[in-house]
Image 1 (spheres, rainbow, N blue to C red):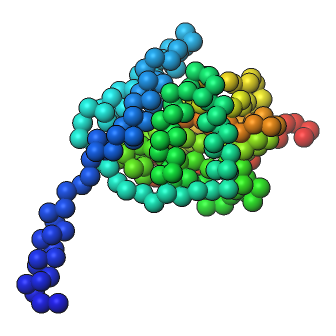
Image 2 (tube, one colour; image 1 turned 180 degrees about the horizontal axis):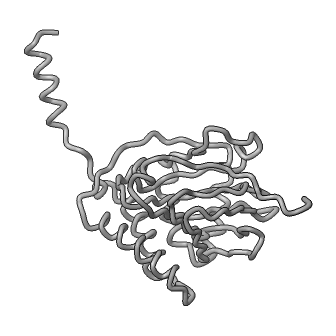
Image 3 (cartoon, helix red, strand yellow; image 1 turned 180 degrees about the vertical axis):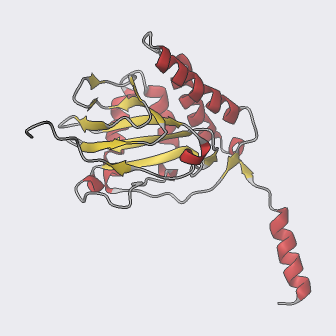
Length: 237
């Protein structure tokens, strides 16, 4: 390669402009659904949940109203993805039908991941997540992480926590329980405070799809630090 041709190639690279999320309407429609979830859902009288909803919707609003960067990611599936269509079918029957349609429109483009260096073999067939907006999502931002997590029927997602991350789940399709305290149906929201340990179980015959949002310091959002923790033993246990 001559010096002239090398300069031309470098010039072409520097002239390439980053793609913008608004050039991909189906992804913007999906982002709008996230905005609606956190803008119009109830806080149930909780000041903490109301404040969390505000933080998430302010972040999504900025993404919708600015020239947000778009990064192409290769589609990737995991074994649990065979249950995705069923979870969406359940969602279509309830209050999350609009979100289900938006997910269906990009379903073939989603990048499903595990997020753990070491994952129990049984869980590898029953769990995966995909990031929609965030430092590693196709919609790039350092202010929030938005995505989905999918569970197969009869799944126990072990106790885990997120350092410095405030996390919420909103049920899209399927029923589930956190820490064995209640059963959550489509449309319900659960807020996990930073560092709080939580364990998820799903119904015996139906999968579950949850939307999630993470808010916290940029340096924490930009680093994947997902760890399964050992449950605390009770005295005499």
